[in-house]
Length: 90
Image (cartoon, rainbow, N blue to C red; front, side):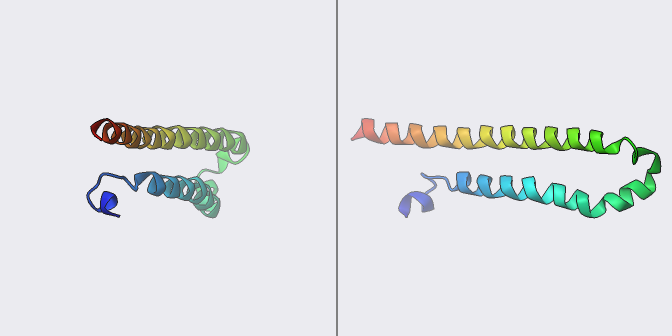
């Protein structure tokens, strides 16, 4: 418990996983809920939009996954280096 309070151990990894799943589910759901307003504003896009939107969705999910993996990897690296330094000092 003292490691968390003194910021020697980050809780960031768990928070990042939560936010990854939140954004991975919330953004497509939000678009699904507002898509009718979008297509009313741009009716010419309705015919070809599903392929474009599918590609954008897949690129969004891929970018989101890579971004959060990079952040989680950084904080994992910090934890590993902290463990190694504690073992060297003892």
